[in-house]
Length: 545
Ligand code: 16G
Ligand code: MG
Image (cartoon, rainbow, N blue to C red; front, side):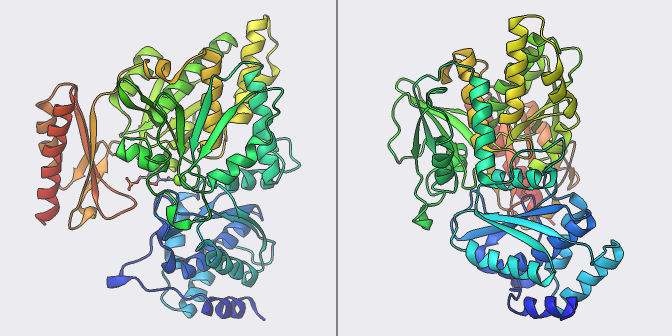
């Protein structure tokens, strides 16, 4: 059968469900994400686009991940991973949206061919796509649709079955660098565990981890994968006592339910089940294990959270010190990348105390990742726990090739080299970030309380505001100011002026039909008051058009 006929026939098996009120499917901040029963046709069409992208990029492997992260169990999502394990290039998000929204199967074939012509894609060269999914039962149907698209588009594929999102990102990069000097690791799930476990042992270098770490896995894919990973840590080299909780993936309805990183961050409390043990060092993954939040419940003072900002400042401070001990301070540009949601106290601590450069970008991992790549060492985290530390090839070479003049310098260089392998370079990874935190705490001989003492967060509040049309709100200055509707920003500025150490901004959500308002100020009551004022401004402007 001719290429077009095959695509047409296969597409008929996976029709697209039209959305209500003529709305379009949109490739958003994290791909297509919605109720799973709307996604079968979307997954098919994403398969076609991934095949085109592989051919456009000279047959390099493209990844597709089926997950809806921290969303409820009924949702699912589809996103594309670029050859080096990064998020899909922004220009192609538009193409994904165009291809997915074709109203008929015939239109789909037509738009597909238009893309082939416009992008000058050679359909005769090989294409390769690799994919994985989280533990949602709906993932089965979606990968079937995806595979059908790949067969119809004469594309080689590997189904890695159930994976965390960062594992799929790892595998994409490993596949495309296999057998080259910049090989990222063995092309298998086992290869991922081996690489990280060995780097963990090297980074610990005989240091001790204090007490038990409890890990809440959101009843998602992180649970089974963490259990699996732990088998790769040699007990005689590192004693790592981990208690894995909320790791039930057999009852899909409990996924992300009252547990996981998103619950902890948004509710600002520990998951009720299992009952929090006073003082226990605890962390939470989200449903696809790319977000991490630490916390403990203090017998005296109650719940205390160490979020993405804290992980970022911990990593920046530790790595900054290592770079100095390694004698590389003058050669390495270290930068920290945050979003407007970063607590002002963390930004101050990093810029004033650690004396490191801080850059603010719009929300969404791809923006932070991109800016972090501009440094030799780029530390990036969103407050919600997404993030990682990127090392440039020059930095990795320097860690390996610098001749140490003292044991202390050698120790610093070895630890930096180990961190380069431990920390996932493709995307934020809860498992690898957690090991990084454990390494740092062990090196510093710190408890969570010591970590928490580095600075005091400004009280803050985040509010979701329903508006008739969120697209009326446009931002500038990395989402810190509204450029539209005209007049709204001036009113926010007026409100902010009334409070001490205050800051507030409003932006349209990239994942739901609402605006978000963030406010911080010197005291809790001022932060709440400021948030209320700004919410009223947004409500007024959101309804007045
Ligand atoms: C997505 C983004 C996350 C961001 C969030 C903001 C990725 C992988 N995920 O989940 O980074 O914080 O959207 O959501 O980029 P919002 O636009 O609804 O506030
Ligand atoms: Mg996630």
